[in-house]
Image 1 (tube, helix red, strand yellow):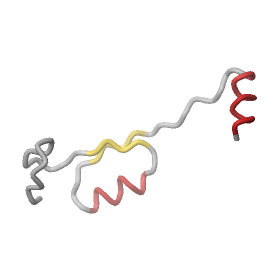
Image 2: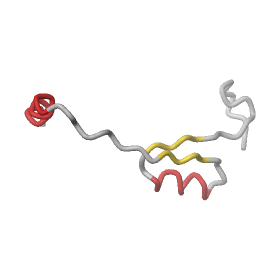
Image 3: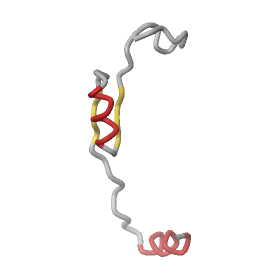
Image 4: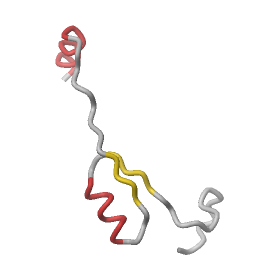
Length: 58
């Protein structure tokens, strides 16, 4: 990895935490970037009033 001058990297290779789309993590792994894949999805709505408000927004 070349030095980008970014003090956050400080010459260290990046390590990525990927939440969601696995294709993004696969692409990074192909480039030898360490990736931790987190399987996450939003919890289902529990409040009918809130669900109706969200439906009205969409």
